[in-house]
Length: 260
Image (cartoon, rainbow, N blue to C red; front, side, top):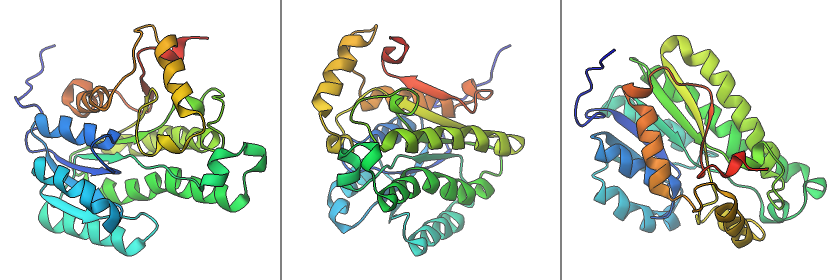
């Protein structure tokens, strides 16, 4: 079978990328890769403090839409999708790259995690993906692809990952169920599981430098991955070349997850 793939392969595709915090963010790696392949971008920032870091990146990538998006504020969610609906009227790609838990609950063990902290972590890191997917789906009139970011600690115990392990496990299960529910609309859903990366979010984990060193040592390829590796993987999965791939957790970690 020969596919008639245009070059650049994502030319004209509309991509919503959430969760960019700075130029080390996984979401930024995704946005760069989509743009390189011709996609148009809508990029969000969390608040005014983060805007100063994200706005230059959005300008660099020629983002057509640049807006605040705190998923805990329904009015910001409404404003984002109202603008996408007015200016684009459709959507092809959605990236959810956000995770958060209160510091005390993140750095303490699961046994001592507060109920409030667990619920906050689950809401921001997992349920927000479901809420945003619900808003994206009607705009994916010709099918589309959704991504969220997970980690190996969802499947195996990773010391010091703590509350985020169960939360990411719920996120990966959500991906499978959304892939099932959205499949008839030709919408594919993926969980992307990078190896440890030096992002702002990861810096809150206890002994994170040790996690980095261990990942590099254990990976069959013998090195850490970077945001570009993740971005290009997502870009590939967004193209027609991966049109029958959906519902899985895709590891981008140099093979570290296969090791005992």
